[in-house]
Length: 454
Figure 1 (cartoon, rainbow, N blue to C red):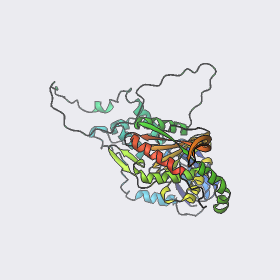
Figure 2: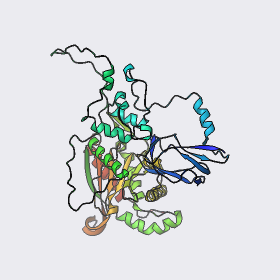
Figure 3: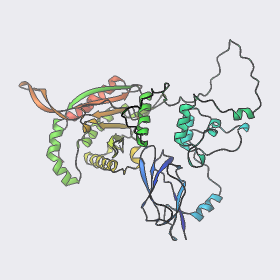
């Protein structure tokens, strides 16, 4: 009997843990190679975890809703002597545990070592939890006293966020202070010289200073609990508005040439390349050309530092089956032609519709486009997708009578018109840059060659 350990796979560069949503196999169930073992959820997207071995499931090590660090053993399978790549026999795992362990990767927030009065019963905290604690100035002494709801009392992301939100209204635990001898503090004179500079923790993420007003639930109402994805979206939107001073500029573009060209070539395009061409990749092509002219649109802020991105990775807002929106990313969009952009747009849109997006599909975006026209809106004021500094919304294409200048004079003609709106972070993108970039996008769309070859 060959028992193989199945581990939580690494799903993205910045993802360190995942939550178990559902087990598709139970102990005693047979499982095939690449058959779905469980569903997991990260901060970015829900994913399936396939088995890396065929056999019989013998043990599940975590329950539904447990938070599991990347690399942890999640289940064991009797592989009948098969030990494929990507799976580690349990006997080998036990031998590895007896060997000296390598130095772990240091997270962004490295807590100070506990003092002599803090005891030696240290708890395990995931890198994500440690980073949140560091950003909010939560000391290791406080961390040790946070009740955890995870496996074996482990502090989860939800636990640390709840603690940060409520720490101002709760008194700090006094247990450790009571174990230390009292410290005599000399009186402080009224007139003091300026204190020496000290390292001050980074400001905490936005939390409402005033509790939201209570809502009456009497009468003919229905109470619906937010699902996990909606809670993440709500948190992300509130944090973005609190982080970036939003400004939105508007313009309109005559996209008649684009509409007529697409109508003319869409049959040939699909027959030749096996892909349906929509307006989205055409818009992306124009946007990428304008980002090259205005590179500061393609950046993020880290305190007082501007992080200018050399790669142009375009995020596209897409609808999930449950109605929530997610933003998969077309990587290196500036290196792809219209055919390549079309293939990527269609692949990511299909993956989103079928809940097949991978965690890496939603990471690394440098600029986001949302098509509010898909839902019939003429225009919108989108919220910036942090940590980016701008997001472009394209509205519905409508026929309107427009005044056009000709050699014979002004005439009124029916044209296909579309509104564009750009929301940008006024800390780095001022009105001149924002409006200039938006105007450049409109001009690029209007200059589309209607005689372009497929």
